[in-house]
Length: 260
Image (cartoon, rainbow, N blue to C red; front, side):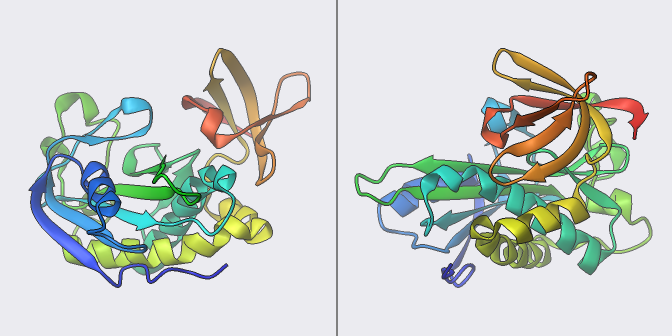
């Protein structure tokens, strides 16, 4: 699959409500082209999947979104979330040596499941045959434990907390790493075996017991694998493999103490 010039154009804003909304609006009015990245020094109203809030600290975290015109069937767009999660996890391990893993379907966490980064991908109609994808990444950089709201302190982490005594990356340096991850992720959407392989390398869910909510259906069992055409494969208590696709999941909860 041919790739757009991801990161060829980078727009920094001092502040905005949401980089996702700002990137979408600018793309739909022709101000941002395919592969352009928009980032903010401070984001006032970040969001995650299903309308959840993403907490952003001014200057201590990164909020960025990239505009992409898919060169694949739009039904494969949910795979971009998985590809970005796996690619960003790999980059954080390789470039910064961080002890992080991917948590299905869109989070990067430490080994205690504290969240370092989150990914959101949205598709928008342009009135043409080709839709627009906006992929957003939020990542905690320099926060200490006291910088997080009290109710998030046991749930969130940062690069600074994961690498004590070492300088944490600036917003500009972190954005370079994110752009590298996006470039790595983009071709994986059309390369199923490569995406499955990278997921297996970076996932912290494989072999772990989880409870997955997908609409009215709850599946509990042990994660065995991921296949691009089926989704997350969970072995339930009867030994049956249940397949759950990323776009169907509203919540994936790890059940502590069970890894097998």
